[in-house]
Image (tube, rainbow, N blue to C red; front, side, top):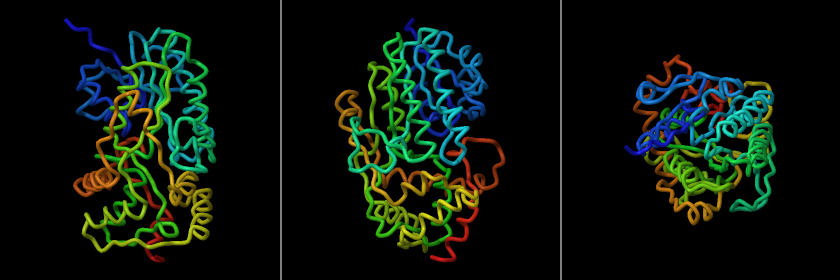
Length: 348
């Protein structure tokens, strides 16, 4: 009988990690999930589930027993707007899982990082040699998580770092749910200045495939992951509005006016958006994915346009349930309260 490869997926009930779990199961892995939230009904019967906080050292160590591959996805995302949470979860939680993997002689750990470690880059495309320069607390914490990984290499467990661009695909909500609702209602959708900033996304399935290849192919390597076919922010949103066939349209707003207001409303907790969203929405950001293509044999299948349409279509098909749902889920799988953003349509 063939040996089933064992994998622990931290944050396995979250949006991206759920896609990763499904793909791992499909490829014959025996999967365990570590998360404070329960996995969805179609997954929980197929996995071993540990309802454990990543900061719980003993719980994390116990979950890593007899595990070959760790896929570390637990993170406090920018919506949290809480530096203490960013640090305790994204830094110290990462150190917990690394130490547990080392103690149990795990074969390989894949750390899902973030493009936020680069802040607003001086030049594009960004590759693996670009020096990280985070400009807000979330990006700083994710970079320190990377540094913990790098410091722990060459101790018996291989560690890969995978940096995704903004993740989209079937079921992705969070701040995108606000955008989708505006388009559904036929509201104006703002872009900063001309909206000509090039902005790259990554489909959740493409990212999952990259993480699995990084684990299987081995090596202490770092990979930047994004779509190969992407557009300007205006172009991507215009494609979605054309598909939606509502009365929605694009409205240009001056970044010099809107960015300070976004930062202030975020600071006062009047808006769900975090400092990272204000920082990046009007800026160009895209990865050079050549290293992953050459070393992993990885190729992204989805374009920006395809993945944002897929996300929107899921929202429209499930809108009533999503807006009325009270169960606790990860932020990327849930509707978000608009706060002061609900007033935007009145002034555009």
